Amino acid sequence: MNGRVIGLAVALVALVTLPYWMPGAYYINVTSQILFYAVFALGLNVLAGYGGLVSLGHAGLLGITAYAVAYTLQAGLGHPFAILVALVIGLASMAVYAVLSLRATGIGFIMITLALGEIIWGLAYRWISITNGDNGISVHTRPEPFDLSLNSPTAFYYMTLVVLLVSLVAMTVFVRSPLGAALMGTRDQPRRMNALGYHVWAIRFWACMFSGLLTAVSGILFVYYNQFISPQALDLTSSAEVLLMVIAGGAGTLLGPIVGAALVVIVKSVVSAYVTRWNMLLGAIFVAIVVFMPEGIVPGSARLWRAARRRFAPAVKPATKSGARS
Amino acid sequence: MSALTVSNLCKSFGGLHVTTDVNLNVEPGERRLIIGPNGAGKTTLFNLITGEITPDSGSIALFGHEITRVPSRRRPHLGMARTYQIITLFAQNTIIHNVSLALLGLSPLRWNPLIDLKRQGHIVERAHAALARVGLGHLAERPLSQTSYGERRRVEIAMALAQNPKVLLLDEPFAGLSIDERHDVHELLLAIPRDVTMVMIEHNMDVALEFAERITLLHFGEVIVEGTRAEVVADPRTREVYLGH
Image (tube, rainbow over all chains, first blue to last red; front, side):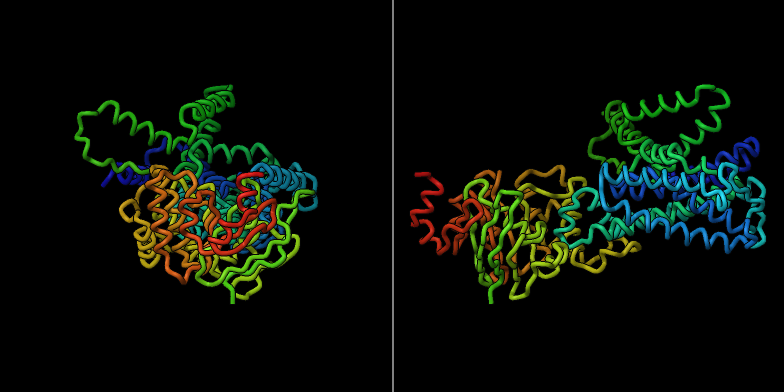
């Protein structure tokens, strides 16, 4: 049993028992937000972290799914159908998004995704007959899977936790799989991967689809949590925010996006109650992360921890191999 | 039937003719050396053969099978492998992972998002075998970033060999190696069986000449001399290109 396993077990127990020790429904709701933003960040991390493809339009994709749920419900159809429609539309949009943006990599990819995100935002803002424009669409009820009402903060929290855990397991499986290894290969040496017989474009396309699936799932959670969707959720700031979650937590790591989501949501929702200039504080935290651990909080603190152990505990027998692989 | 046939191949970048009407006929099992001064178009020729660059005109055939329009990513599946002059490896990964990626590239498993790559016994075994072949079996689990330049050269060759190619293109496999390392790589290349046809670009004449059976001399994108080792070495045009007037 190494430190990593113990740490994860403690975190899991803390999350499962959270409604029993968290003071008040507000904080349970904040944690739910962290969890569905974490799913969103995991989705972006597939591209930004493992694929080397930084997307600045992901909030648009999240928004499309959220609007799909809201619009379908508004049309009088049931929750299961709305969720199904949202997943199909979300994935179809991702396919179009991928075909358009994968014409480039690097800066070109960022610019195309930025433009696509802005187009989607513009549509949400102006296509009033569908989106209700600036007023947004309200969602009056939450689904009741297996007759369990998700109306209480605790019930919704557990639902979100289950979705996050399933997403995390899916990510872990993917990263260890041949397709995951191929995706990381195309990030590091695309030319070489092509010469080794890989279809680099297709690998990136399927990575986009996996990213799109997680984004769609988080979009569904997003709209059911807020019970409301408006163009503001799709703007560039939202896309940049989720990218910051990924980069701050640690791009290309499994737990980094979750930690990044926790950081951003806590500063936005909790610290902002005490610090008026919370935006500045968030900026200062990002600067500190970039300066002290440019690889992100999760890999960065692992590195600093190892360095501290070497520095302060040289007496430990040097033969023991530290199992601190991140 | 020739292993590799290049016919009337041309390529220009704007007004610069980098490959002019090149013909090449490499027999199965042959060891062919391509020499020429800097800028002669040797690596460009390799890039054309592997499909990384599309030729303006001319054709390329692998064992009589026309591949000029086959995408470069398909060519390894047809039995063509290459190494790079500038080492192009996956620096963050272990040596065994690098070789596993080479094996996976030709396996349908490469599309699988659900299984654990490290538990694919046949891939891991074959990767270990390829590493043993280049004398790196004991370093399999070492991260590539912690290996020497000479070891990386051998990883490059192991990755190419792991794909079991019929035609192997080696772009300056001795570049930047010490005398001892050069010797090791030379031995390694000599040990490759005859069912692999090899085409090598090399500046390093002492080892390269020993390796080659036939030599092609390129200059400004054109084939100047082609023939057996003795013929090319004795040809006055070789001296002219290499030593000046």
